[in-house]
Image (tube, rainbow, N blue to C red; front, side):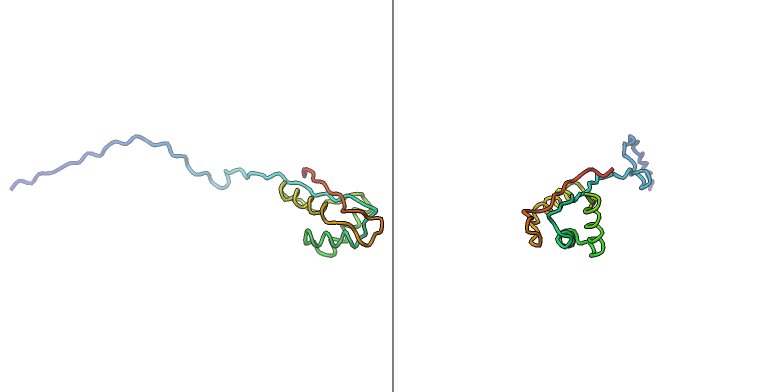
Amino acid sequence: MDSEETVVAEEEQAPTMVAEPKKKADRKKRQVPRYHVVLWDSDAHSYEYVERMLRELFGHSPEDCHKMAETVDTQGKVVVLTTTKEHAELKRDQIIAYGKDDLIKICTGSMHSTIEAAG
């Protein structure tokens, strides 16, 4: 009995274009633009109001709230948070909607807040 040998030729494959995954060091981190939430001074709001609002809306510590209240009073404005644009807009709107200071008779509404691009 003769043994037949079968030879299978390997098919030549065309090279495929597959992008190599980028190494972590090669990847550029996409920077999300940051925005400051700015609280503006108002003579119609008490320190107690400012500190309570900052604790309730931002969760800052009592010490940080007091420092921010002093800064807005002495410098006219203070950055209370730096975050994404959407979050900054939300927090600005919450400050504006917070309501009047019941401790100050001449107070007619909330404090003023704006957002600005963080340098």
